[in-house]
Structure formats: C-alpha cells, structure tokens
Length: 450
Image (cartoon, rainbow, N blue to C red):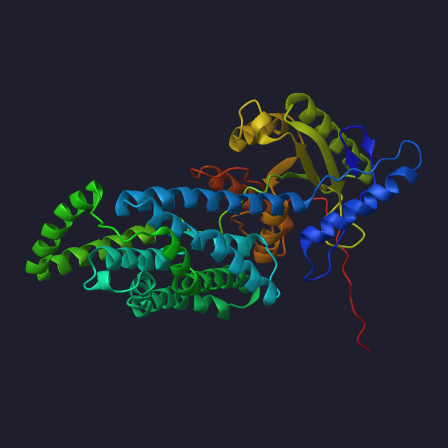
C-alpha cells in the first residue's frame, strides 16, 4: 500500500455480512473509528478513502430530487389541462404517499433501499399519478357536468366519481404490473440486479392504486368545489386538433394500419443497429486507475513506480486531493492480482470545484496526459462497483474483452498486439491495453498417480 506519493501505508478492509444494510455498517464503522482515534500512537491517523455510504446517500438525494421535480411538473401540467389548482393538489398527494407505501412494503419484505430498488422507484414515479389523475378528473367531471349530481350530497358525488372508474383504473395499473412480473423469475446476477427494480415498481404502483381509490377521495372532498368547470385554452386547442384527426383516421383504417406497420418495421431496423450493453455505466463519484507494469517487476520496484505515478498525478491534476494504491493481492484474496498490477484510488474534490465543473471526461483526459508520459505501464479507468460487475460477468476489467488461447506465449503476445492495434482504430475505443504475459513465472505440477 502506498499513499499520496509519500510512502507506504496500511489498508484496513471492512466487509459487511451478507444482507446487512450498507449504510448502517458504514455508520457503525465510522463510530468505532472515532473511538479508536484518540488511542492511536503519535503520527498514526485513520483515513477513509472509500465510503460506499456516500453513494447510497447520493442515490437517496437523487430520488428526493426526482420526486420534487415530478411534483412540480404534475402541478403545472394538471393546472394547464384541468385548469384547477385544487384538483392538481389532490393528485400530487399521491406521490409522497405512494413512496411511503413503497418503503413500508420494502421493509415488510426485507428489502433494503439500495441502488436498484431506489432506481425502480425513480422509474415508477412518472406512473404513480396515473390512477389518481383518472379518479380526480372523473370526480371533477361528475361535480361539474354529472346528471342529477346537484340533488346528491357532495360526498356521494365524489363517491360516484371514484366508483365509476374503479374497473378501468385497476385493470390499467394491473396490466403495467404484469409487465414487470417476469423479471421476478430471473436467476443469478440478472436476478440480483433486476428483481429489486421489479419489486419496487410493483410496490409503488400497488400503493398508488390503493391510495387513488381510498385516500385520494378524502382530500378531494375538502379541496374541490361544486362549481362549473370549463375546459382550459390548451384543452380546447388540443381537442380542435385531435377530434378531426381521430375522425380522419377512423375513415381510413387500412392506411392507418399500413403506416403503423411501416413504423414498426423501421423501429425493428433501428433497434438492430443501436449499441447494446449489459447495464449502463453509473457515475459512482469515485475513480480507480488500474496500473499494469512489466510482469517481472519486483515488489520494491512496483511500489517505487506507484509513488512516482502518484506524485505526477497530484502535481499535474489539482482536482485529485489524495491517492491510495494497492499493488498485488490482499490477504483475503479478494483481488487475485500480480505484483505488477495496482489499483489506484483517487480522492477528488467535489465536481463543482473542478476547473471544469462536473466534466468527468475532461478530468479523464487530464489524467491520460500524465499517464501517457510514464513509460513501462498500461492503464485503465474504472469504478469500484463497475469493476466488480465486470469481473463477475467476464472475469476481466473492461467493457469489451478479447481472449486468445494457445500453448505458445510468444505467438499469443504477437496476436494480442495485432488485435490491440486493430481495436485502437475503432471509433469510440479508448484505453485499449493488453494483459502482459512475458516474464510471468509458471509452475508446472506433474501428479504421480501411482
């Protein structure tokens, strides 16, 4: 272990038990570290260089921001289309209450608020108001234009408005839920990733449906008024365009089906041509530089080169405030690496304080300028979680990997060099490198089977 280009350090790795809440584990470790700090010898300090709790907190903040943005957009759109701020306020109540119901169900089923479950909730936010919009819109229509509603008690009018749409609202939400149910049958890595997403969406939509048919009519009875309701200017303009278009389409059924078929065909062709990946790369807020040196390098030489690289980065890139690097495998054997391989964790300023704020590609470019001037190394950029996912899927850190098998190492290295040259010419490829084999010592074991 080396640190900040100044010398060696000692790494402590904390592993959470399977199923443990990452945020609780992180907070507990921090509390214990604070207790240990006063008893440490002079000159010894404990520094946290990777904290997964930060990522969890950012994910929670993202959900909160998405919920707030959705709330504002819903209010604006409902006022534009319904022309009634009271009705918009009633519908908006569905968002926080549905999120609360989702978290209650997640707790009952033993689910934690991890990246995937929170992502599922973020996906569902736009659908949470569907049922409430239909219910409130029909209630407003019953109050304003319903026959004989003037002679009915106000609460009964609201009841009738909600009752009339129970079947279409329930069937609509049920169809959406059914779409996500097949995800619950996934196994292995795919199941670990997407089952929490599917469950979060199912919980959120179920909560919104229940709230729309039971809770939402209650605030509607307090906020809505028995008064005439006229369409807004936007709805009048939309109706003036939509109704003639609908009539034209109904008179030309064959033409409409033909156009829909052509659009479907074009969609299939375009889909076949777009790029595909297992899952999108998430900005974890942490950066790791994987350094690979010559396989024959010694431990001392590897550590000295790591310190040199760290000094060069910290002098040239002020956005990097600290560096912690580990060469080779740790004692737990979690990372089977040679002494020539180093994972370099970069501690950085907040993105808003960079010379070009929030521009990660620019920062990677600045780091490449430094690393390209250091001979005898190859490098790649990754992130902690992204690195683990790549290792689980293909066994190597990289988005695309080419593996060559054969008994002759010189021939393999020659072919690898040719493939590397070809891949570097592909538009969009970056950080193409070859895992070095020359100089690696092999042990051949002949078993005496007697």
